[in-house]
Length: 187
View 1 (tube, one colour):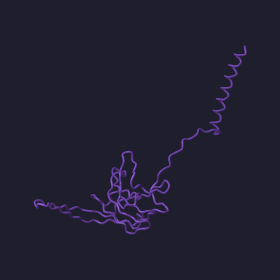
View 2 (view 1 turned 135 degrees about the vertical axis):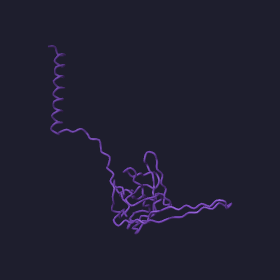
View 3 (view 1 turned 45 degrees about the vertical axis):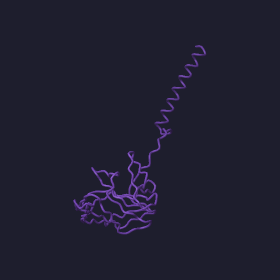
View 4 (view 1 turned 90 degrees about the vertical axis):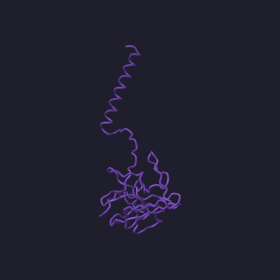
């Protein structure tokens, strides 16, 4: 054999040996493929500085009446609506913000609909009541969550953007834990 043929045979043996060594290394666990970092898993619940107490949640039914009279006096309209208020025994928030209710529709919280909200000063607030702005019965489910008053104007600025990014008064997180609970309205 000529030198060139020997080099080709040698390269072939080296490739086979490397392939065999890599196979053995993977099977033995000595070498692993670099894993793509996993996205942090977002969880829900209470944190250390922010919390929503849902034990002892109460519901109150009521009726609201609104009237409209035109200046010319020709039309008078009255709107009567059943209302529901939900009271949380205690809510703690590190910075001023909002306790917000989002409805659960088809088994999933619908974050682009706001059913009601209440302003919270920093610290612990007791007996926080939210008026639900649509019909709600016992057993109806909601996502109760905290939102920060980012611009500190005491106005709930909620903008739902198509890609799911809330750029105004954002949800309160502690690490990857969103301060939120799924609740069912009590009797």
